[in-house]
Amino acid sequence: MDMKFNGMWLWGIVVYSVAIFSSSLLIEFDLFDGALPLLSDIFSMAVVSYAGSRLLDVRTLRAVVPYALVWVGTVIGIDVLFHLPYEGLIFFASGNIVAIYVGVFLAPFFALYPHFGRSTSSL
Image (cartoon, rainbow, N blue to C red):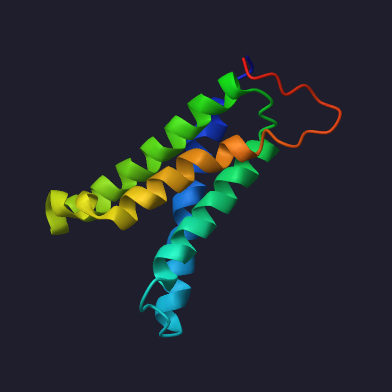
């Protein structure tokens, strides 16, 4: 298994950065009400997670799991740094935050399919 350790951490930071950028755009255009921010964060983080998996050329389930775990860990770590001092643990009790973490974790698995002409064995 050819692990790209720089890709693990850097793509985790990129995932978070894109979500912050999309949230900032919503705030700038006064669109930060209702479900739009949550959907924007989930969508942007999931798309970047998916793209990272494709660009890192992850081909098997065994190879994608470490990336997904590190990316979720990176996002959680950055949330701890940014939100824990100000909001406390109540920040992590939100279903919206859990949905974002689940989206970041699951999106790389979709990069496995379809891989036309490539092996996609599960283990």
